Amino acid sequence: MVDLHNEKTAEIIFKYIEKNRPRITLNSKIFDIYEGEIGSHLKEKILQDLGEETFQAAKERIVPVNIFKKYVDKVSKIYQQSPRREVTGSTSDAQAIKDKEIVDKFVDILDWDMKMNINNELWNSFRYSLLQVGSDKEKPFIRTIPNHQFLIMSVSHIDPTSDDVVILFMEPEKDVNGMEKQIYWIYTDDQFAIYDSTPKIRLDLMLELNQDGTLPYDGKPFGYLNESTNLAMPKIQNDTFDITLLIPLLLSDTTYIAKFTTFTQMYTIDVDAKKLSLSPNFIWPLQSDDETDKKPEVGTIKPEGDIDKLTNLALSLLEVWLNTKGVKTGAIGTATVEAAASGISKLIDEADTLDIREAQATMYSKFETQMWDYILKVLYPFWKEQGMIENFGEFSPNAKVVTTFAPQTPVTNRRDIVSGQKEELDAGFTTKKRAIKTINPNMGDSDIDELMVEIEDDEEVLSFGEPTEQDGNETEGSNT
View 1 (cartoon, rainbow, N blue to C red):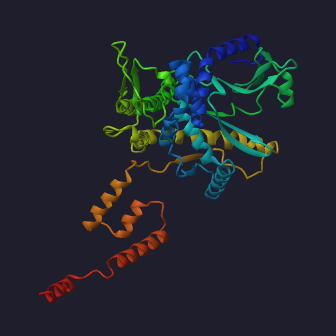
View 2: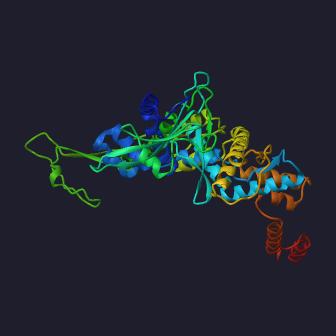
């Protein structure tokens, strides 16, 4: 039993927080990149690797390609189509209809699918995610806590993966001297406490929230998803951060090399170069010195750098990393620096994530059932009792919400789809309308009908005035 108001417990929790500072720091950087901010981290890495002088020459040629965000978008697709949610175990057929209406109202009010898609993206970013459920201004809400703003702690001697303590990092507070104190909100299944970083329990802040230190309902107001089967939180994602910077760093190296290899370098021997103009259009009158054996000489050097090797190294490393994440990539071949960005984009776009998405659909189906149980059977009755939410009616006590995701299909290259449909059409195995529907799955029947009319009109225009075979023969005969 964890007592958050016990000094010994507080000491243990704060040692755990300090131990996990590196995790919070790294997660903050990864979250920046997830939000699209990669440039500052690239510059920091280049400065660290190459020093101030080289950094000044290279900083304006950075290639801020965000492969991490593209990877996350690629594997976070299960909520792109709204899942189907059914209610089982209702007390009667009439109540089953009412139960489904209550679920649908919550899906709409909570903006459930969009918020769960964010949860899925952060799970794919860090391999664990925390969903908070609450009520604010007479309206329930759910939100996923960014991973640099929370820690999960297990105090179980039996199950090291149990999420016994949830620690939220709230906005820091400044005292009268301008000194910042980090504020922590800490939860167990039946307690809540606010501490600052001194560490000191902040009863004043708890009173502002009308909190006496106990939770008014059963369980923490969170849902936790964790990939690890051995730890309360997975190991820090160092590989994610490193590869996310390494790929654009290698591409930035190619632009830095290009800066010095594009132009021919000139050199002089026994020439007073201070008097020479370095403008593009010039004539240098050089004279030998009769009094010495020295002869003035001007030459050129063409610097060389293997940009293509760097580009292909970046693509190869990205492919290996994606494979370690369970993403199946096709053959990448070779790429030139001109096609580097498109090569990276194509590598991710055409990668196979079917197995990943199927596994996530199974995981999130179970997670949703747990969350709906907690929301509808614990929080919803409490919110109604406190007048914090509109009363939508009673939900069956033994009912369950079962979530079924749309079938996860392999991602196929559009060119392959078009080619396959053309072969089927030519062989007589399908119709033109069905082929167009397969190629354009998001088009409705009326849109397809309009497109077919446009195609037919175009075909008539193209064929108008073209000589038929008979016309051609007559024309040919008249010339003889």
